[in-house]
Length: 354
Image 1 (cartoon, helix red, strand yellow):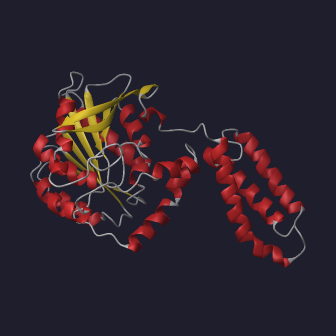
Image 2: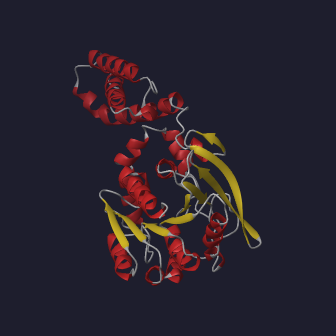
Image 3: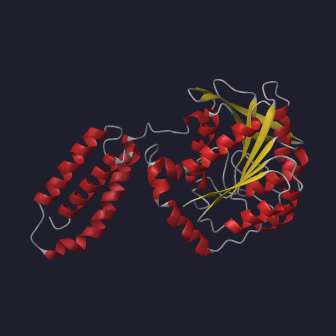
């Protein structure tokens, strides 16, 4: 009873909170919210009834809480296995739009990608470029869905060494992929205007590509000017990830699916990321842009801190908007609704017909 009682108390309390916050992926009852309240209350009441009259029970609170959390996430992953917010990022016809796998020619290689077309497109498309160690779909569903809501077609690709693209990332070959993707988009009869959205390393490559390929609008998210990664940065990112953004994801998905999505590998590269960022010289590329620019940075980003964004803002000679998202870190920026909404509205404004 010394362990069972605090375990039931903690499990009941966590279940009640999950039901109250509608965290379907972290609930013993999945989408059945009213049943979650009932079971949470019953577990808590049972734990209180079995509570022994000894102070040793307080020593069991922490291990009981850990086991309760693990149990909740494990059972929640089973009860919420139907939760798949990124399902529309697989080929097929979905309410969000039609998704088709594409293979874009780039010299002797091809670039794997997905083209997602909304039900009523406006003739404008956004090419989405992921960051280092990422791929074309991982944790992109909120951003892509918001762009589709603005009736913008989305092309998302795997850069060399990432996802399905088995070509190692090497210099200068990696600078040809985004221009090839933009050219492919422009050649489509249903696309008249093209925007480019780059995230982190993808932003550095996008700035370089924008000078070469000239999109109609460019957005750079958390794009570093220089790259220096430390163990302290890693642990700070872990802390930021475990805060509200990941908790909020439990409304849409489960811990198991988050883990599977997170496990995307580090990418195959023949050039160090720090060397790649240095060679791309993002401030120099930004100074040469001819299209409108939107810079989006997280307030708590240590990898691409705010001063990097200000340097790019000062280098820009075109109309430039600088947005700082409060509370966002490097890995949580594109998960926040303020980020996705701001980017989608900006692209909709700049890519609509004149």
